Image (cartoon, rainbow, N blue to C red; front, side, top):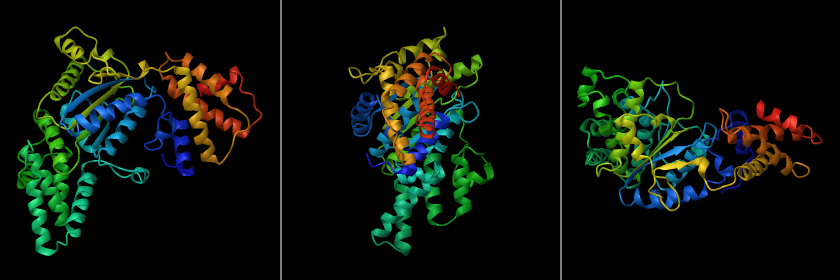
Length: 415
C-alpha cells in the first residue's frame, strides 16, 4: 500500500471520529480481520467464476449497525475495481431505494454506477451515476479512435458502427437504443437529446411525445425492471468491463415496513437470488448487507422459500455459501479492536505530524474492553470504539499527562 499522505490521514481521522464510518478511500489503512473473507471473494469469484466463467452469485452480509458492513463492502468494491468490474454501491432507504419497489431499485443501481476508480478520482469526489458513466465511456472510446488516427467522416462512421455493435446481445431493446444513442449524442454535441435519454434511463419521467422519437416506446416500471438490470449488465460487458458488482447496504435503520411491503421486499429479494441461477444473468455479483435476520422471520411461503435460499454459510470450507456473518468471523473481538486502535494511532500521528509519548496500548485496551461490553446496544461496538479512540487521541495530544481512568473511558464512549 502506498505511503499515507498527511491530508488523506487527516480525512480518515475526521470521517472516523465524526461519524464512526470509513471514508470512501483510506479504509485500507485500518482494515483488520477481513483478509480471509476478502481473499476468498477475490480468488473464488472476482478473478475466476464471475469474470472468466460468466457466473453470477448472491451473498448476504450480516452485521450490526456500526459493525463494519460498510467497511467490508468498500473493500469488496476496491477488489472489484482491480478486476475491472463496474460497481454500484447502493445505500438502501425508504425514500430513495425501497427494495419492495423494484423499479426504484433499478434506478438506485443506475444512479450509483461507478467505473473503476483510483485514489485521485475518489478524492476528487467525482460524480457517480449513469450520466458521468456514459460520459467517461465516450471519452475513453473517443481517445482510442483518435489514437488510431481517425478524423472527420471516418471518425463519425466509426462511432456509428461502434454504437450499433455494442447493442448486440442486450435483452431490452429500449435500453440498448438508449445507451447507444446517448453515446452518439455526446459525439454529435446534441446536448438536449442526450439529456432526454438520461431522463428516461434515470426514471425521471416518461414523456411519450419526446421519448418515442428516440424509439423508447415504454417507461421503466415494475414489469421490466429485471430486464433493465440484466441489460445493464450485458451492456457494461459489451463495452469492455468484466461485469457488474452490486453492493446493497442498509447503512441506516429503516422504518418498519407494512406487511405488504415486507412481503414484496422479500419476494424481490428471492427473485434476485433466483436470477443468479439463470444462464442469462452473467458476470454479476450481488451483496446485500443488513443488520440482522429478523426481516426473514415469518410463516408464509415467501419467508420459508427465502430462508432456504440463504441458509448456507460462506466460509473457507464453503465459499459457495450465501451468508457472511461479520460477527462470526474467526477472531478475538477485543484483540481485533486493539489492532484497529493501533492502526488508527499511526494514522492520527501522520494526520497531525505528532508522536505520542509512551505506550498507548493500555488506553487502547481499556477502550476496547468497554466498547465490547456494550455490544448489545443500538450501535455496533466497532463504531463505538473507533469514535471513542479518536477522541482519546485528541485528548492525549492536548493533555499528554492526562490519565484515562474508568470514568473517563466511559465518557469517551458516550459522547
